[in-house]
Length: 253
Image (cartoon, rainbow, N blue to C red):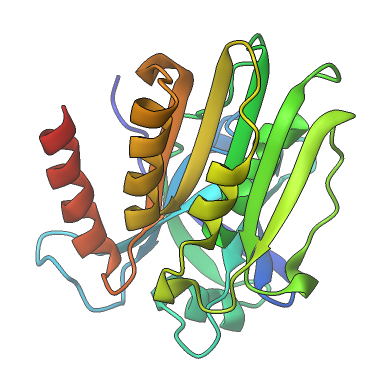
């Protein structure tokens, strides 16, 4: 199936979700070309005027669709902010205003936990919160298990509408780029429940690798029961991180 062509979207407005999370609302005449039902899936934000890492393609950054209301003509994308170390996309979001335009590619596939599993484990850091929240919103009322979220500060907690059987654990890491291992440690400290688990985890690259070893080797979770992805790597650009992911995928294939 051919990839859909990028389309130009228009900024409708912005809002501060938490001190370190900003939401940009998109609309415009081409929004209808993005199908509904891809909340939590990825899109490519394309910055045609930015310096290129590769001469044959423009600078791109990967983000998740937080919400999409075709009837209202609005799609929201949340941006995790990084204090004084903002990147191309976060700097753009901080300065975005109504009427600004951006080229957007995608959407890509949506990865969700298995609602038929005996229990679920959802975990992620600030970069994963938009997709993680989409997962939470699709959980059945009978779901049980854990949600573990690493945030930059206590004020970055968001309201979660969780089934009664889900426990939430917030992990505060003020400098996630220092790789203190708090998210990994909290996940390993959880009592492992009986039955078939469905795991959804997205975080920093090295944390992802540590958790992959834990899930597969320590807990014996099958590959078909896990969605595990790194959304960034400390000290690396997005293009460098992409290369690291490709090399890692070949090594563990």
